Length: 240
Image 1: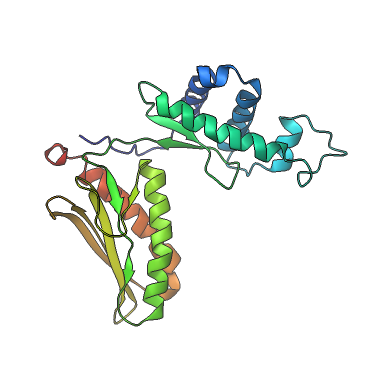
Image 2: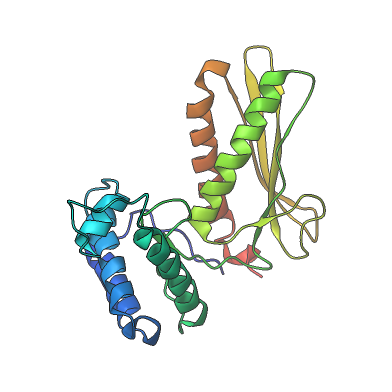
């Protein structure tokens, strides 16, 4: 059976526990620099009220650079060490047994650590086929492209696993796809969840919105889709 996504975000105590588990592991025990960097990013970013963590701040606080002379553009210490930290986290979680339910992740392109729920989906997991715009209307195609990116990121962040299926989805996978078309009063978006092996449709929804509200509509579709997957694949009768 699938593990459902918790309704509440992780508590500070749970985040501290996840940090302790990582820092106490053999992968991190031999690197004081990696432990210090991860601890700073967690406590000043993730537990610091969501304030952005800057390269300058990391260089000064973690690597003790001189504020009078330190220039991130000339000294790449933060970028280098963050890259190493990202690889250490990946290596740690790849071999951690049992696999932690909550994982600390450092997405590419920034210094903001996130605490991600690692769900266990049935079968071959979750796959997504690109949403398509139907008809000649440019607004439908543009929204389909934007929703593709947002939905892909949202599902990846929520479930920790997502296969991108341009054509035939993997056997045993549960597939999300859909389309966007121009309706009488606005754009109409359809999303569905179906089983690759049987073609059986498990869930679908259709929503219409005004073009001016497309960013709000995209967020609504992402949240609705993730909730539907959690509920639908959490039913014992559907588990692989």
